[in-house]
Image 1 (tube, helix red, strand yellow):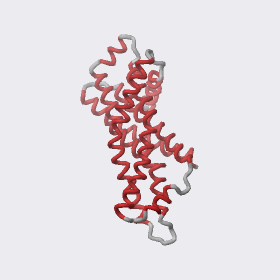
Image 2: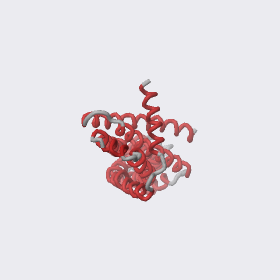
Image 3: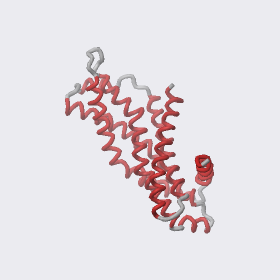
Length: 246
């Protein structure tokens, strides 16, 4: 019953979020600001993680190929596919949940307990639309660019690993990353990216928006928001993969 209650309230909450903005110029200004705050400010951590994930994936794949029947170019192929299909879209999403999602939940929770949201409702505004929609749209727009950069940096990380360790030659690695590339794999990654961006923003916003109590409750709501968002992302990752790749 608790699940049904939250699911129903979350659905009604989304109805308020996706109402038509009352002031479009203000909405787009807020959206561009959220694209910077939620997206571009996350680039440093995304870049560092992506480079090292690509490097580690290359080294681990090389260490597990002990048969002369398997071409070494497979290492580059495996690095590209792992970054493209799973690591960048999903792992980066889980990381952004901890960074972006907790921030959104804390921000809205603080506004709720300090009665700022109540004041907006009294003034006849739609706080859910005004506060949450720019975050949702902003991250859904900027996240595909972030994940595309993550994929690229992961491949670069694999290249740096080949240069620094000599597990394979650069030409073999380059041959692998261009082997049997299917454009739909990138489309699949971007579909997941947009869906996950929606979850990263909307679920934490829901838990922060409906906080009851004081500052302690705000902290608990942030923790719960991260946990539930991560679970939803993993479930949707399985569903999307089954629908699009099978």
